[in-house]
Image (cartoon, rainbow, N blue to C red; front, side, top):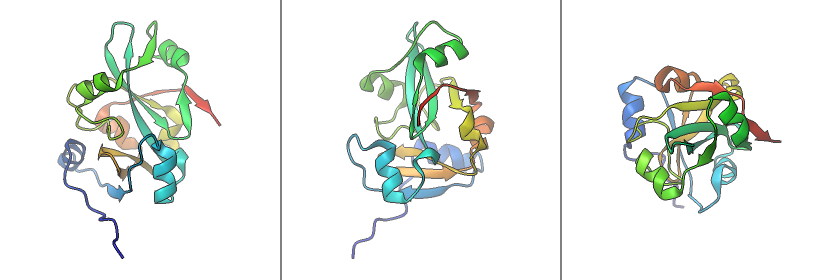
Length: 164
């Protein structure tokens, strides 16, 4: 009979959203190591395409950046580098990503990060009605309007998706 609580204590991400007056819904699920967006979308009954993953990457100078991608897609690193533009983009090692974002890998949100970083969003995400994105803790997503990504984070649209 135990039902998962639908409320999670505040995180830097939810604090930032509240300060900005952004309406959001909370979605709690049982975090599974390496389950990713497939696991969260299955547990929450949400289309994986509308679950957005937050990826901390770095350019050739080891300058960090955030890429927001559909859960069912991967990032074409070559195409991303060409569009942003830089010579090379690669994922940060987990401990480096954690140092830049202030979040544990698997619980990384683009909101309320420790270090200001440029944010890039797959353009087709902005056409969705609503997205679910990490709320700053493993097993916790927030539902928001995609425009929040450009309005609050200044996310720049790119087209670098690989996958289905």
